[in-house]
Image (tube, rainbow, N blue to C red; front, side, top):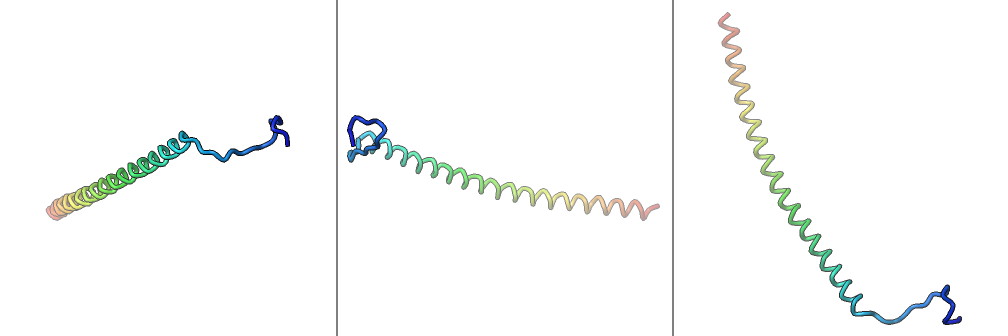
Length: 80
């Protein structure tokens, strides 16, 4: 094996400080990003629960209104 042949593979057994720092930064950034996603998921779940509650209240209100309309229509039909 010749050292001057560029087609041969070689490995160095050294680690640069910049590689360690960049790997640490990427790892920390990944954790930070994932924790941000977790917070957004929690906020969305709270918002979904709130919207479901509002929808149930609207449905109840609508059913009461339909019951009133049905009662009025029944009275109108009975009077004829």
